[in-house]
Image (tube, rainbow, N blue to C red; front, side, top):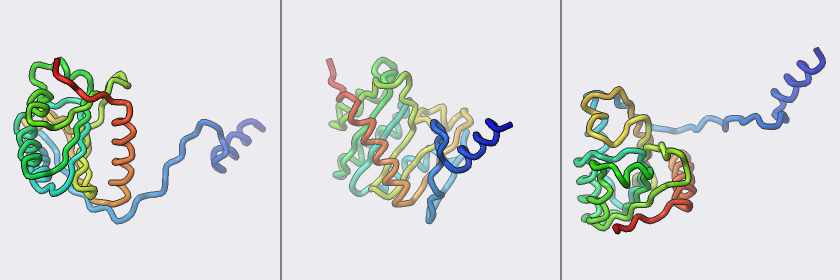
Length: 177
């Protein structure tokens, strides 16, 4: 009985070692949500890339969607600074957009530090974060059940950017052999 009360005390007072506590809720977030299949997620991704003025930071587990890659190249040609981190799986995938990006001078980094670099994130102009289960593949919009959130919040943007930088530090610039 005493040890159960001790656990409850430590848990609720925040002193219990190894227990992660959530941060307070982030206020003032504007959100749009899209679902697939055929729920407009792909169009939302392309629309947000097309609206970028300064920068796009991307993390992707899978990236085979040519239309999204073309939107990134178009943004690069408009002068948008773009950097991409991909999972190591994309180095050998025959449908990977990795080579298309590097041919168009978009730096791509490979995250080999994790068993799977499973993030699906776009950070646009230090103001918008696109995230969710939505993989950047054609099937995501055509037949998969996935979701995409488009979030506007300075605090969220800062947190996602900090996380992107953390992954960038242990990723390697892809160089064509």
